[in-house]
Length: 185
Picture 1 (cartoon, rainbow, N blue to C red):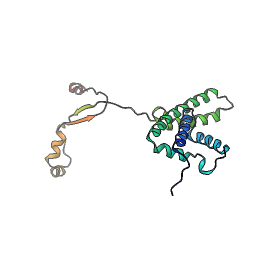
Picture 2 (cartoon, rainbow, N blue to C red):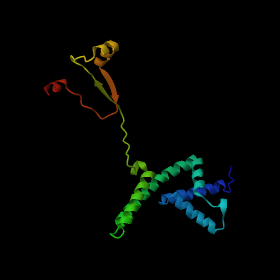
Picture 3 (cartoon, rainbow, N blue to C red):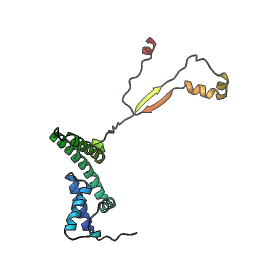
Picture 4 (cartoon, rainbow, N blue to C red):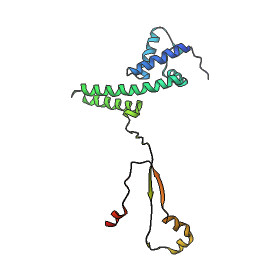
């Protein structure tokens, strides 16, 4: 079912700007839209004339520039949540500790969702470059446990087990083992 919109392009942009400004101030999209809708109702608007959260989300997704700005504002909102949690922690008293703990945990969670790169539990570590590791497996007179199975596999497997392998691993530099050090142990 197609919706008829009573919102002009200019009104849409202004509404999204108000929401983004609210996010910069530490307000959620829902809080900002609720405030705008309350003011619209006071001005006599009803029904489809009143802004909804869904409308704003659809409008943001439809416009790439607004969506990119929304994503940046989400990171700022995460920062605002973290700052609010610090403020609550500093102002906490023995009488408000239990309630403050719930608020702080909720704000920490919201900050981690709004800005996971800075406040999330998983930190992404990027490593550039590659490390080459050469491994050589040599078996000396290993007793054969099942001669019939070895015959079925053939000489190809035996050759592959003795051949050196070359692996490329993205890792920190690894010190090469000195074969003479292994002999001492």
